Amino acid sequence: MLELAHKLADSDAKFFGGWVLAGAEAHIHQPAEAMDNQVLLAKERKSIIRVAGTAADGSLAKELRVFLVLPKHKLGTKPLEPEAIKGDLLTKHSFTTQEIADYVAYTGDENVIHKGEHPIVPGLCMAAWLQRELALTELDWRITFVAPVYAGDELCIYRTEGQLAAYVGAINVFVIKEL
Image (cartoon, rainbow, N blue to C red):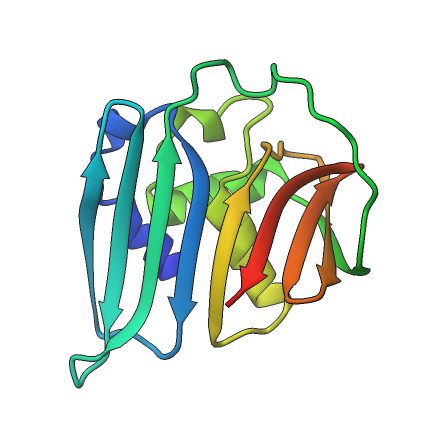
């Protein structure tokens, strides 16, 4: 996941400053020999970018598609409704500003929302952490990001039938459908 995020950062960082990750689809099946990224859609407030990794034989080894949006309102200003948490707790983690800084340094994700005193945890940073935490070498995920997670927030991951749900307190922050 991290190498896909690293290649994604080859996109025009100036253009995507302040944008947020609304969703992603990740397919990881084997190591990649070569990586390539392509902007599939570039509009005023939304964009889709695909990163593909090919194996030595030329087959698709891994792929990441991200759906980015430029929010109309400042992040964190829209009130969120708490909800009843469903599923079994798998794991939890609080990301530090240093972990976020390390991710930004490795991937080259220079988005301003991941900097400052109270940065937003990059969505792909959380996905990469979860992949490592669950010791997954292969995965097929569709991730929908619902609300921002900030440094210091306790992120709790729950498993339900066919999906993983992430919460900060009683606020659902993202959902991963296992494809």
